[in-house]
Image 1 (cartoon, one colour):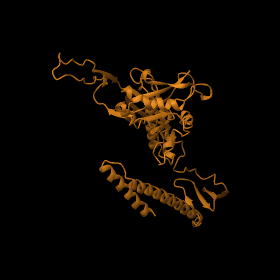
Image 2 (image 1 turned 60 degrees about the vertical axis):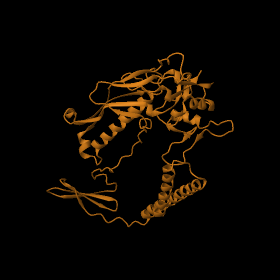
Image 3 (image 1 turned 180 degrees about the vertical axis):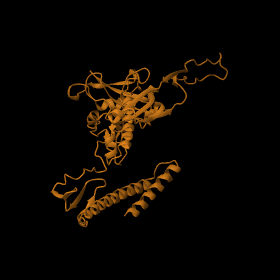
Image 4 (image 1 turned 90 degrees about the horizontal axis):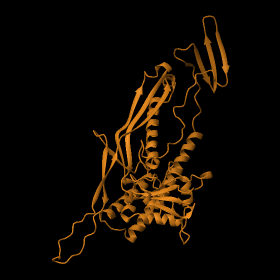
Length: 395
């Protein structure tokens, strides 16, 4: 079945590559065949998953019984632990006598940890993954030039104009500056834990620091004030997305279908092409209920694993960092920013130093601890206001 699925996938890939290479739309026959292949692959995947689960379950029930335990000598200890059928016997030896004690719960044996840890899933950095990242070296700041005013359109003239062609004076440039800002984190743990745990504590600490730095990047790209931290897309600022790019709700203290349409149409088609929606779970819950005048939902659930759902045909990023209603019980309050639509590649995130991890083995020796420092230098802000639209709750 897996071989059959692989063949179908190759056929689908070949079909898609052919259409893309010829730079054309799918024919009716090709479109039908693509849908058939997609359905067959999905059906086979479901069957394979079901069979694999059944095999795993069958493996548990048909497993051979546990072998009889043999005496286990603990190196460097004064006792032997004998495990038989779930029971533990402690044999304590000294010069004068041998004492045997049986403990049904095996509580007298040294404790061991399973070499895995149950923990909460880290918050996703969906927005950070889409912004433009710029490495900076050997400079105290980064200048981001931008076009402050466009050139006006060309004008029709006679073959021999009565006066010289007038100069265009509307084209202007500006510059935004990014400066390195410190981001730090310190994690400490005991030397005893490092020496006795079955888990790789030092490796886990590095991974957790990396996750927390990514979370800090994500949070400030969304909510940052721009003071000693990056400037966020939900923050109104002339240095990023000004209040002129706000779309106010059509109805008071409520998000409506008209608001979604107004935000969508506030972006030029070229910016819409790469635009995504950013909103919190609470806001998304209300958006999912919105319908057009024909009763059709604006929200469309993704049909493929790993692909975001869409709103007005554009991907939706559900972020745990995006703001929700600031009123009582999470209700909307006047002036709340609750949604952004924009091309996140127009957000520039510069870093002078990526995540730098330093292990301090001596600094905390007095408390029998080891420290792991994380440090980064970064800054960021939106650089093209026209590529963004932000929804504001009406009073």
